[in-house]
Image (cartoon, rainbow, N blue to C red):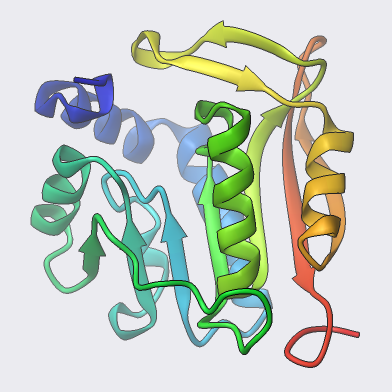
Amino acid sequence: MTPWDDPAVVARLHDGWTTDPRNVADAARLAGIARGFGSESVLDYGCGTGRMAPFFPPDRYLGYDPSAAMVEFARAAHPQYRFGMTLPCSCGGGGDAEVDVAICNSVAQYLPDGERDTMLCDLCRRSMVVLIETYDGPRAQRYGGCDAPIWICPPEDYMGMLAGFGCDVERLVLDGPVDCALALYIARRRGPSGPA
């Protein structure tokens, strides 16, 4: 069992995510950026307890999380929104995007390299725009909240992966401790179903 599967931990995380002024401001900023892309549909990848849901109309939002405890909490906290533990098959390498914007808020740093790469590839295939808020910096592993491992990935790795998945990418530094930075990656899909 991971920390994300313990209902007591999930409730504690939800309280921090929804009451800590910095967390609330981070979520509002990310939602504002997503809305700036005229998002008719939003996929919240790693939605946790659904803290991003209230920023979007219920009929335009889908929350996904692999943790049953997180999804259960999100459904109880936001019954008018859709949450699930599985996603429909992605459209594959080409085709039209399934959603306008995918949000990945503080999730990527909890995934080891292979899982993170697969998740980013999937999001780039599903979405016209992918917003990834994560910590980056020199490659390292450390432990974060709830003693969960965090894998810090260098900015050039994120930039290279997202570009390789067919996106134009920009990186914004949101907050920067000395050894790593909280960064936002904005990846816009290139080609016939995305920006030129």
